[in-house]
Amino acid sequence: MTAVTVAERLTVARLAWVMGLRAARRVLAWPVRQIADLSSRGPRALAIAPQDIRTTDPAIADDIYAGHFHFAGRIVDSHGTSPFDFTEVPLEWETALMGFAWLRHLRAAETALARANARSLIDEWITRQSRQSGGIAWQPQVAARRLISWLSHSPLPLEGADAHFYRRFMKSIGRHVTFLSRQVADGLDGEAKLTAVLALMQASLCATGLESSRRKYEKLLVNTLQAQVLPDGAHISRNPQVLVDLLLDLLPLRQAFTARGLSIPQELISCVDRVLPMLRMMRHGDATLALFNGMGVTAPDTLATVLAYDDARGQPVMNAHYAGYQRLEGDNTIVVCDAGAPPPPPYSMRAHAGALSFEMSSQGQRIIVNCGAPSQMRGALREAARLTAAHSTLTVADTSSCRFASGGIARAVCDGAIIAGPSQVETRRGDDELASEIDVSHDGYAATFHLLHRRRLKLAADGWRLEGVDTLSPTAKSGQGLESVDYALRFHLHTQVRAGLIENGQGVLLALPTGEAWIFHASGLPLTLEESVFFAGFDGPRTTSQIVIHGDAASQPEIAWVLSRSQ
Image (cartoon, rainbow, N blue to C red; front, side, top):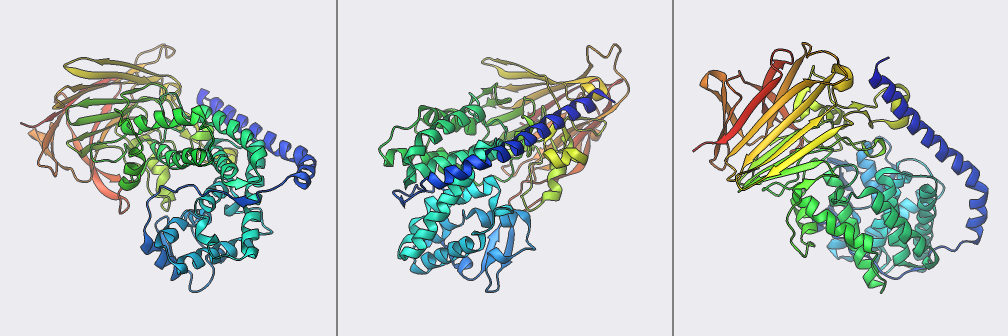
């Protein structure tokens, strides 16, 4: 048994132990909860409806009324039946349907027809779920999203509603609050816990009758934010998309405190103030976010919406030590590098094996990219997108620097989580008037190949030249020199970059749509242009190219390369 196998089994065992504790806690707490439910009071009425700052499209309201439900990249025609009766639908589509975030489009229509349609669909859902407590609809994160959507858009179905519907609606909100409170008490973790806590906090602010729980939920919110949002503003999952989603919930929540005349928790204020500069760190000049750890297509309108709340218009973070990201800027050239270890297993379900990968853009045009995460509807491709080979970094023996739970008990306990990967990622940084430089190394290949990967990146202050050096070296425990093992150094190109070999295959000319041109060299080594896939395209995956340098660790342990703007 190799050392990495031992580590993987221990990780899975720990996660299985946590799951067992949650199950035991639920069983032991059942009698107490039954008594508590008899004496507890649910929400009586709604006092406020927080603003949903997500973008809307009133035309979608017409589609929904016509029975065309377009979620997660798939259109489903209800043919006059209830969409909640569908069984043979993709998981992601059903998740979006059950989350009810689409209510915002009906509200934007501002018509009596849209209000009646929303009321009818909510009533249908309540009727079908009145005796159910499982399935997609009652996954904690889906239930939390539905509660937030109902609270935010409550004026839509309640305007003109009769007393019977109002009572059913409030009773269902109370059921959601009870369900999510139990889930959190039972040890819910990961992003699902964060969403659940945000929903509970919002419910206690919106509804009368929950005042006695408000202080408890506020303390829970503060503790959860402190645990999941790092000091430099990144989420512990290291996924930029989570930051966007978090702000879409935190900003209305902040307004809800003010609307109820309550003091905003300092941690909530601090969290927003930290997250906004962190988002700017991950943003390229074309207003898209760097493709790391589960980030896919950027919705520019949504990103612009949340950044508009940055009153200070702060500068992006350059050195995010806690998050494990580094940013280099030279004039209009931007480089963002993954310089961190993978997140803890409960937060790694969407994380990638992209240690030391980087992205580069110039004058608002992306040049070097990672392949990114495909849309949710393309689950089969998500595993390929998480591999090291889908990132602009070095891959040893066609093996990823992280291992994902994908078989046996590991799949049952923590399907998709990272259970082994780099544990030591060291970063050094230097900035002066001439250039900015980072020096990063990781040990993701230490256990299997006894190798360390080190990458140095240096961007000139004028942004015209990026120098890099990638090195493989033996670990201290290997007790010997470098063994013969193949590697591939990859530089994935954005779909809008046209690439061609020059100088007898020792250089690559990169032509950008802006008219700019860059040249790639690697110390006279032969270069190849190979096919790649860009998963994060607005219209789905698209073919593109990648510059690849193949080598052997024993004979060529170091590669120096340079990207320079053509005069």
